[in-house]
Length: 114
Figure (cartoon, rainbow, N blue to C red):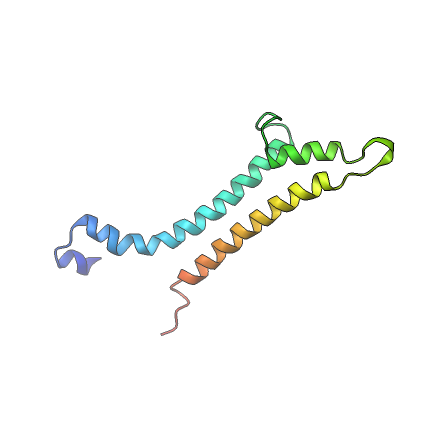
């Protein structure tokens, strides 16, 4: 950054050419993990009934309704009402975390061997 400033580069050029490429992988990785955290929080609140109203689709609402309908009439069990939404949520969250971890590992400059 100091070398670019000494060569007469503008602040905008220094920001876009020197600083932004170094912080973008960290921002993207943190953003993906933050999205996964927000999905878990919304699902938890919806499961407890503290989020969106029940006609609005939400994984927490689906799990809440499925858990109340887990045992149907005449002793029938309906496990798919809980398994499918929970599996979809789990697969999305694990994929977001894996992508964020792979991006962080790929762009990590501390592990580069000279």
